[in-house]
Length: 114
Length: 112
Image 1: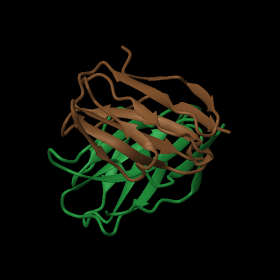
Image 2: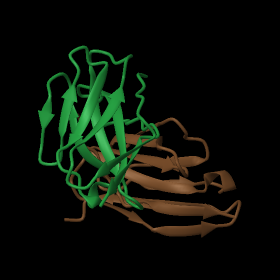
Image 3: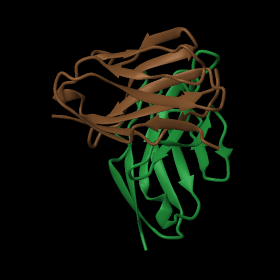
Image 4: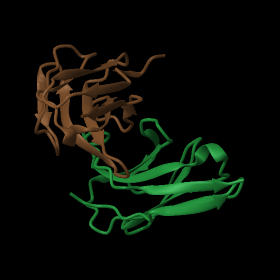
């Protein structure tokens, strides 16, 4: 299975943008890139996903490199409530993949400073 | 709007005891799964189900059993609890081919 590499921790100031990087150099053509986050004492929460093109939703933006070997999750204005562990995950697309069998690494602990 | 509900939230077991962690979802999702999360680590897949009557093993299935008699429920059974099974357990569900998994709030299990 393709693996992802993320920094262990990052800090950001409140109301500033945050760019969370993820490397996935062994990604295959059918692997989707998912981001989940886990707030303290809660289950993981879906943030965003993409395949090739950059994606935007109400929570964040996902920028995918042209060669798909890396991606960046962008929080446009960090708030204290965004402090969480952010996981970058690859999963196979199509009927037998997508949100199934997510393989979580150790993620990036984001600290938001007031 | 319940989503994925796990019970109990906390449990302490003695070594050798058995118990069942409950998971229920009200979104009519075909796919359900169980993960465990050890301190400071990401989640690891234990078992999953693609629909009622169908289950399969994940990355760390030993010591756990599952069954799926209905679409809504996916219980996880610990056959003979061991201290190594002390962990936080999460249940998740999604549509077949869906791109978003929904997780429960977790069950914190301690085996002494």
